[in-house]
Length: 229
Image (tube, rainbow, N blue to C red; front, top):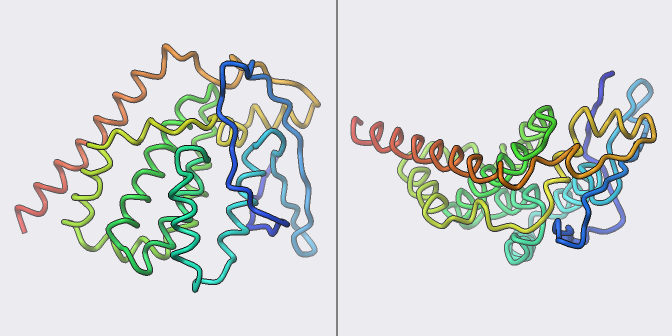
């Protein structure tokens, strides 16, 4: 079944996202939300318990706010970066791009690494497909900055050195709920236990190692390309 996601407008953006706390048994009951797009298309998203559709719509609201508020919005998101889903950092990145390009790239690479970390912790690997969709939030503003290889290398190195890729406390449910298993559970009115959608914690350190290694490989490749210019 084709699922189509689109920017939506909601009443308010809370910049909130619950952590997967010890008191949370991880049980999730996803729901489907349908909305008509034009005459022939229907937007279907997973919502409930801060699922992908919930956070996507909140970021969509922020995305539509005037560019004159770039500094205010970017600052607000940045202050809450460890308590919100990484998708918000993509919006911060595009806002920073208008006046603080280095910070924009830092926020962008941090968002990417956190999204990959969250996505790779999902049992359902199809959840990783949402990263390309989320990336679209910032691409128009971030793409021009990518032409500065030295700035790109420097900011990617900063993210690598900071260790911030793994310090956020929000539950990976935001992206895990974008996968096929959550969609079919919602379609069938089923509930997912923690182990059905989230990998065991002892599997997380190797995921972190892989992400670190990939970042370091990209940093070294950029350094080599710059040196050869």
